[in-house]
Amino acid sequence: MAKIAPSVLSADFSKLGEEIKKIEEGGADYVHLDVMDGHYVPNITFGPPIIRDIRKITKLPFDVHLMIDKPEKFIREFAEAGSDIITVHAEATTHLHRTIQEIKSLGKKAGVSLNPATPLDVLDYIIEDLDLILIMSVNPGFGGQSFIPAIMDKLRETREIIDKKNPDIILQVDGGIKLDNAKEVLDAGADLLVVGSDIFGHEDIVSRTKKFKEI
Image (spheres, rainbow, N blue to C red):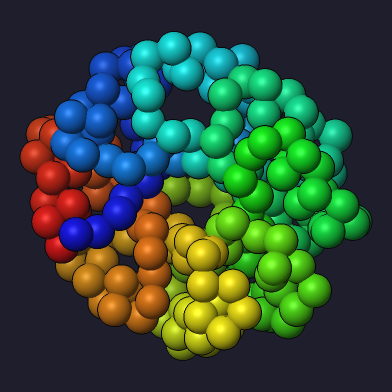
């Protein structure tokens, strides 16, 4: 059975609480929260206050993906708002190891996100400290993009690295995940799928979530 983290970036924010309840009913494993600052990526979403508010309505773990410059300045705020996993981009912080250690010092799981063009050797000296690796299968910043096919090879390579160096790491994939390519992505080694528009874009969010869980 697939593990999924529906991304509320694709949800209807006028009824966000209601839609989070629907993915919970459908069996979602996490809520994926995309935080964008308009600098690291060309879009702006939300910050700790929104996360703090929706923390009150669900017990699902919060998988918080920081697409922001200098995330180390805000780690404590996101941790205190109710994040369970905090993922930063390798290029966004000057001292990646220090930022990962700060996340873990606050009792949270730490992840690093790699953009499509980011080489895997960035993992060489931090992989033993990670709880999650997020492979971006689109260029970050917008929902609804198409999966980049070349990422399949990157996924397989990342799976091999994880199995060799730290098998406890969750391998997550984000970008262009649909019902018709989800199995292929899982077969390439992914543990956790971030799904946005192909869940929240459907009229029956509960049943769509269940379909992903049945893969």
